[in-house]
View 1: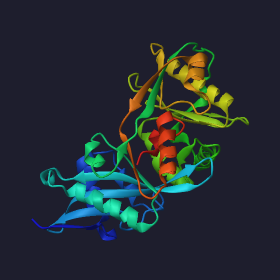
View 2: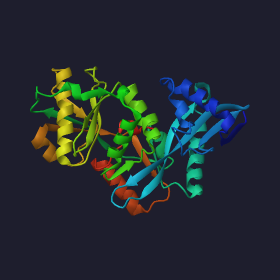
View 3: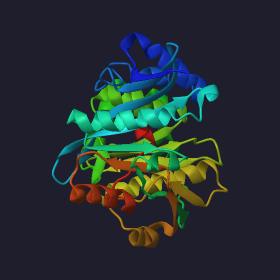
View 4: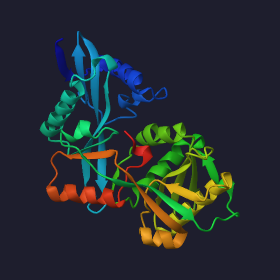
Length: 324
């Protein structure tokens, strides 16, 4: 069979969407966002690459353009987030996606735009041969919480389904202010809504916000599922606000499921070391997540190592709401 490798053109985008739905089977509305101008304003035609047999798309790879912001110098690095690597089952084991990944690397290197590439996978060997390397993230962090409070106000927690557009803008402002060492730029607000908001709604998340000068928010996903309840994200302007948010989340989880004594958080705090966290909250267990991979495109070795070190330590993180 003759295989043609080329970018997916605009009138062929539905073929890519159909392929991804068949292979990954997510909830409706998931893949349309990759080509929607409001959800993906940085998308450029040619960012989806395909393998074609007899004019049928049989394999595809998507490059999602995300900006990683450096807090220390306010530089933004263009990240090529590799997503939706999919091949129809009857066409697998022929190297189609491997060839498309090589095309993606060539595109990113020759564009003179991309600085770095990331992806998330359960099969790292498929990507390591092409230069991506695994970084072991400290996630999740489990705390055997010492002091639950029965005086917490559950009415301060709201379903993410009730977040208005203006509130999303406030959340984006909080997320962007005093960020971690490195973090994805979620602006403009419609991107925040289409991606982070979509993930929160999928997971039936609830959110708690501080309303005073110590603005911040914390999110609990799967709040009614005792096996999967999880503190998936928080943003705070300082250590006092962060402690308030983490404590509020722990108390709310315990209020909903009194049998839970160990609270799971997505990553380490921003303003406390693990030793300080343990002294303040209780015994800490750090798990490792090896699904994230990173590949250099044109960064200096020094900058790349700084980014890797930040994620390895938990000073930077990939939130669930940033999943691409």
